[in-house]
Length: 241
Image (tube, rainbow, N blue to C red; front, side, top):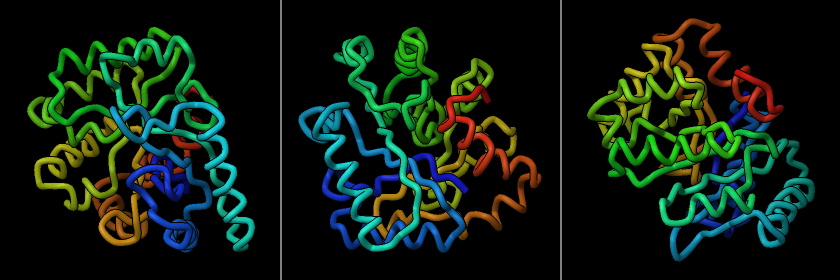
């Protein structure tokens, strides 16, 4: 399985707070059948956690890969970021190519303020697409506009934007409304990917072992394969979905 959204690189954001925890997350992922993780530190959070494309990002990413090799952990880790779509500077970031896409593909993982109005969500996603990227919408089930009108996420799916649900939302760990919204998108087969969005080993751990019974209850085997293997693989190899 492939985890497309995970805050596993230590010291760069609010994810793994130490090398020890990062290694625990990596080992736990492998034990849970995940052999590939796209490391997606927060990017463009105003005033902190910038993580733009450049030397600093490359240094932290390379150090983490070296750490895994040093500890004999055979997890495949690929570069990425979770870009906060801030209206004040998103266009300049796209123009100057300052964002790290998912494994150097055209797919860009984007998140928003949870209270962003629907028209602003549409405007910013259209901007991402206009610059030649395919938006991968991180956890849309957590945004109030989608919770109030989940059909909007279905429209994004139909436009070709990638819908990524969080494991924690489906398991009810991120609030009942997020859970209900995620389950709706799952039941209508309007999601492309489920990812862990893991930050640690306690409240938001990696791996999909705890999620599989729920998916097996609600989804066909082919759809589960699409969510956890096929679609993430196509994204990291820059193929169409």
